[in-house]
Length: 415
Image (spheres, rainbow, N blue to C red):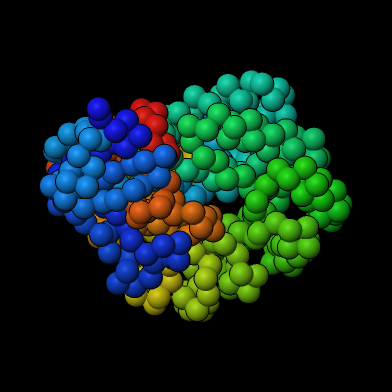
């Protein structure tokens, strides 16, 4: 009788991305643990073994077998920076940017983040769950099995908690793992535009304690950027986060260098994200810390910028680099990490192996996941993405496509 407790998936290439839960740096960022003409054995929702087809077949002679010759198997992708809970897309702003109006100018006119805030406040929790479910399923169909999701489009205590409860509801559906982040310091809402200190008090004294009390978030993020949150305001929010048991992370140095990377390293933040304008001291700070540099090149591409984060310099300095979509309705409306890998290879100086590590093992490290997600090592959750190409380098090379043919979540096929 076949051993239906064990599934063997055979493929032309398997990327195991070895190295445990520690972030990959320098040369280890290109160690994908490539197994040619191999097989992976899955039992009880976890990776049991990876090796040659013949060797795995001999170890598990009665297991169910699935032949995916001509495919690449990789760890389920980890998208470590998204804003996937929102209402409508901001198509009007997209057209303005196509006509040359800068992103920050649109924000000054009342668009940008605050446009999404006005929209989200009018929507019910149930409606946001329905919208989020459809968007996350598209994300999963592109190979992502774990995603971070931020609040930040509510900017009242009630609406921020509403967003995080939506994330909790969606996470309970179990076909994609969600890691929640509180981002009440995403912008200053219009009603507090002339009362910044009062809104900061609200975030620190009311929102963060309420989030912590309900256990609604793992992380606390701040959008530190000239024109948004100052270094002093950011420090106060992060101090309150740590006091309340939330792990810091930071939107840092996206458009201008303002010491965000250095502050993230000082707070032992899980990640410093964006980094399009990171300074030399910022690179050194991240290289000397365990804070992961999470790069979001799709955002700069979509905003029409002519510069990108210095991925090669960060890697060579010893920083751990992850890639993420920044999926959101205004500046990066994509769920496709494969496209982000393409941009990283063509514009950031990364090679395909580094790009795969950046969306698997290092994405998991940016979320401080210690259970093996982001790898296909024995004992790790059997989160597997199958890409319909015979060589992993074709995934970023044939850009703009969705190469994902199948997805398993803890050994269960979900796509």
